Structures are given as C-alpha cells and as structure tokens.
Length: 443
Image 1 (cartoon, rainbow, N blue to C red):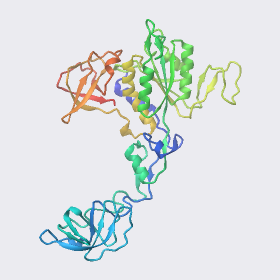
Image 2 (cartoon, helix red, strand yellow):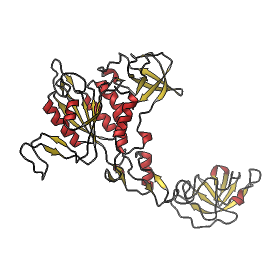
Image 3 (tube, rainbow, N blue to C red):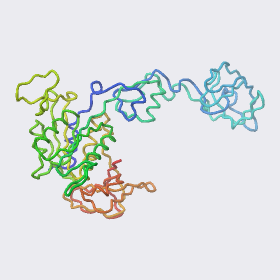
C-alpha cells in the first residue's frame, strides 16, 4: 500500500500538461473568464500611455515652486485648463501653471503637480502654498507601469477580473487559452438510483455524480456525466470504454474494493489499461485505483456494434473508439463512499487536473497551512487521516473546528460547510485541543 506522498508523486508524473498549440483555442475576451493563458501576452502600448497627473491640482515647473511655503507663497498664471481626454495646447513657461485633473495629460514644459489642497485660486492666478516634496511629484510617467514589448501576462495564468482588465486596456480583443479538460464521470453499483427516482429498501441516491461534477467544474474542467452503471461486468466494461474514449480523464466511483462485485480493476486491465495505484494508506479513501491508457494509436476497444465513420472491420472484430486527441488518458477509480470520493478528489484528482490544464506547478496544490484545533482530533494512526471541518481566521491565527457527529466515510451530511481537512500523519493518534495541526483548504 502506497503512502500519500508516493501516490501523489506517481499521479503527477502520469499527467502531461496540455500542449499550448494542439490543446488551445483563441477566444473573445469576454469568453475567457476562468480560463488559462496558453501563450504569453505582450502589448504595443506603454502604461501609462503618456505622462499624466495622479491628482487634481496644477501642473507646474518644479523650479518655480521648489522653495515656496505658506509664509513665502508663489503666484503663477493659469494659462490652460486640462480635463481628462484633452490634449494640452500650451507649453508651460516660467511663472505659468495649468489646471489639471486626475488622469489628464501633462502639458509640455511642466514636470510636477501641486495638489489643489495646497493652493489658493483667484481667477487666472493660483497661489502655491507649499513646495512639492520632489521633482515629478504626483506625475505618472509614460511607461512607468509597463513598457511596450515587455512581457505583460505569462502563459499559465488563470484569467480573472484583474487580468481581463489588463487585457482590455492592452486592446487584446482575443487571446489564446488552453482548452478545458474533459472529465467523464460514472457511478457504479446496483444499489444506486437517480435523484428523481423513488427509493426502495436497500437503495441510495447517487450523490457522487453531482458532487464530482461540481468539483470538476470548480476546477475549470468540463464534467461529462455518464450516469449509473450496474454491477454487471459487460455493461460496466462498455461504459468504461466509452468514458475513456470520450474524455481526457475518467472518474468512476465504487467498484474498486475487494468485494465480489468490485470489477473496476479487472476491467481496466481487460481494456488495456496500465494500473499504477491500487490502494493508498489514507483515511478515508484507501481503495483508490489509478490507471492510464495509451494514445490514440494504442486505442481503447469497445464491443459496441457500430464502427467509426469510414472504418471497415471484419465480422466479430470490436470497434475502435476514437479518442479526442493522441494524448494518454488517466483513469481514477474512486471509492464509492461519498466522503471518500470527495476527499480523494481534493487530495489527488484536483492537482492532476490543474497540472493537465496548463497551470504552473505553484498552482497545482494541494496547499497546507498551520491552524490551532479547537477540539481534540483522533485517528487510529494506521493511515494518514483527513478529518473534515471548518477553517476560520481569527485575529491573524487560523483555527480548525472538526465537523460534529463523527467522521464516518459514509456520513455525507456533516460534510456540508467543509472548507478544510485536518491531517493526522500516519502513526499519530491524537492532537489535543489547542494544539496546532496541518490543514488542507478545500475551497
């Protein structure tokens, strides 16, 4: 059984990030919120575009006002008013000033702005009551924030409102972003029913399909819900083959333990998959299966009756389902228990999806922070244990409150509101209330 660290290393080594050309698309600026830049962006513009005023006041020559004070004020003639969007017409001469507003273009000859709070105006005359602290005070110089041709935004950056604003200001109407990973999700088990069905004795609602779809979407990928598959080998094999051919990543929940009806590992091997992980020393989530399938040339074969367009095959020969591209696929067989499925997604699947999507290594996660536990935390010490609960920031100190009602992997109810997982390393059975614990934020 692998340690958590070993499993994490194996999984991340199996994932090959999207290619910036083959796995990217050019989209309009308003369509790229939350997407990841596939190539660096530069601009032909300087920021600021020209010298401009950072405050409302008066544009002056520093040499005219550098020694003035309230006891020895300087009077200047106002020769121009410069509102925002106006191109100055005058060049400042000795003894002259221009009324200027925030963001307005500095007039030629002026090199400093005196804020209006330190002036007194009477008609066309302004009295300067205090000397500026330095030459160039309250002037934003052309190119001070960014110079034309330099890197503006790097590849691998997730585009949110600030980045969208930068791109808009740089007049980038379209940008190249990585495509979103496609993630197929299927649930296995005869006991599962859909959300709209009446429950019979022994049945449970398939909540994993919804939870995993939400987590996939929150990670920036496209969830492809493929429904419930019964514990019947041939039906499950067909569903798995279709999922592998359809998506970049497959998530199935259930069927990965050692029960009589747990077929996933055997079927993965039958389909040509290479299994890299079968179990991890983690609680919850021990029965986690991770497999890969080769590129399109190796293929995934299905017993479906139809052939691909233009494909000719002999009688009885299985059809080859085409993959979306030639990269290898990764299959995660998650545990069926609801909490186990979510915890293993947060801990292992989410970093893999982030790496695949083109994010830099610093953003793959997971991250951990130190918090003080408000309650005693316990585990059996046999596996690395993750206890779910709420993470708070109080007076600059993170605090962790475990969920009430016990930490059973089947107790989905007290998972609501979770935003952190406290980690008890293997061999550690207790963390007393008031002691520190490592916590993995999950939102």
